[in-house]
Image (cartoon, rainbow, N blue to C red; front, side, top):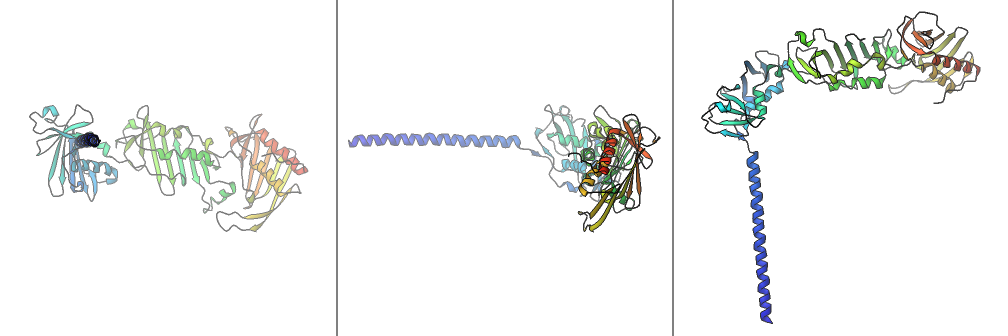
Length: 481
């Protein structure tokens, strides 16, 4: 019995040792495989250093390619190009990127450590020769050759180094850059929540000009009577309130402006059409001003542009400026025939051919506003042809008067006899007269203080007159909301 136990123990021990050996074998194989994979990955991602120094030591970069000679010089931490000492005119970041290529050049690999024939690399007649001069007077020179069979890489040599390297395309692009690509285009950022002024001038279309109401300005102070934050001052004969939602849809396109390509600085070239631009846009917020000119189409999808304070011509996608071509003044305005805050009205006279009605808005100030967020509070005494009208009823009828909505633009002179006249006597002793003169069988011309820009459906005005008769008779029923 004891022999059997010893024999069983020996078998179990042998199996256990075999399992440990097999496990150790697979573990070592796994570790070696992972180590090999890591080495292969490291080898495949490794790069070869060509230069490694601080780019801020570079004081000058000389680039020659395709008959182009660019001299980039650093003066007081700003780059100038070919002696033009106007740093704002050039893209400083782009030139810094060229300096980075010179100072921190890495290669994907070494193509040939000791080349016998430079022609096959395009280095017998280099595509570009770039010389960087350092602050200590030392020079580093690069020769850019042909594109490799695998795209997005180029052959390159450094003076004093016999090896041919394979470098990435970004270095080749920097070393073959065209002068216009160094020009700078600065499009100011505009805060669309703080617009102060907009002007849009277009060939063959009416000019649109919008100003923010400045209640601290005595001339603009009356605008608060007419419930406006923004006023359209062109193209109509009189200022008109701007609809905030429609204006937001319009102005939100401005931050989308960005150049597609920089063309050059020959603004007088007739092909650009910028001597007599077809569009001019001015937008001011509380800090910045954007002043853009749009010229001819560059192709089917882009158009030539320039900023007013720059000679740099660039292209921009046509879809980014489409909103300027399509917007109409009528799209942007409030459609009220005449709207005025009830707090600034003392009396309203309404005339028809047969009658005259007088609405009295007697009020007493009971609480003065203590901040811009508050409004003065009044106690009202309303009357219609001498009949006292309760506050709620009168205010609902007043909403009908100021709720008359225009239907379109007027293309006729405001001539003829008005069928309806409304005179609003304001607290500043000003009188606004709104006349409704027949335009045709269905519409009136809306004539405010002798000038007319719009028409309104007759049925709207006639409905107000009918409700006025009911108000005077004490039978007025406000429209349901």
